[in-house]
Image (cartoon, rainbow over all chains, first blue to last red; front, side, top):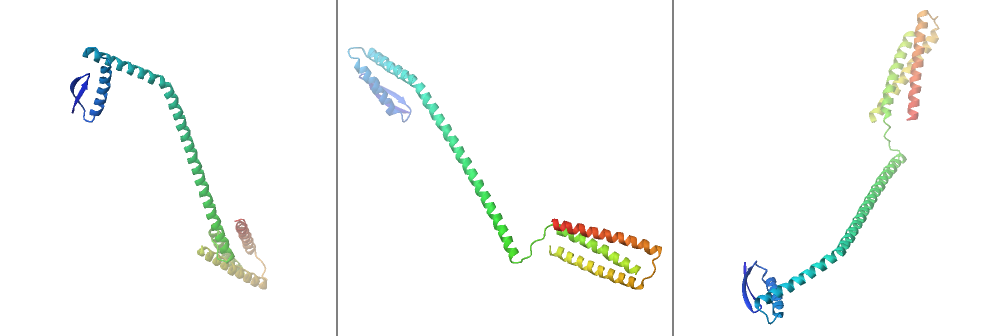
Length: 162
Length: 68
């Protein structure tokens, strides 16, 4: 706590306030003192009474101005909210555009890789390199082996008959 | 894949050799020109049926290879 010495309407007052609020308290005391000194030719109590009434009047008037300004503040808040909403929508649109652009780039990259692979395969074919046979070849080979078995059996039968 | 190609070559080689054996046996049979018995006729029919079946199988295999 801080000790503050105030001088209002010619009288000294010792009061306490929270640390750091001394300057604000001096400022408020100055306002009260100015109002009280404006009420000359009266007792100290009446001076303070009129000072209090005048300050209350100013406070009331200020509150009225604030209340009058509130609708305008509401409009401003609504405008700010609308602007924020539009900004968010624009940001979403930018993100969507970026995502589409990224996807298109990936597709283009994939297509380029496929093209490069196809070109490499073509180059192999041109150079006469062995090309990987299609999958069914293994099955065909097994069928060929079975046919060979059957023809060999036929040959054995024909030889017996001969 | 190389194994598949080797198997294919092996199978074709075996088929060629078996066909040579059949040709040789048929040529010997024609040279002898012995009269056919009832048992021979039955065996020949079975052989023809097997030959037809093998040819059909080969046709099927060739068509499948052509069509991929």
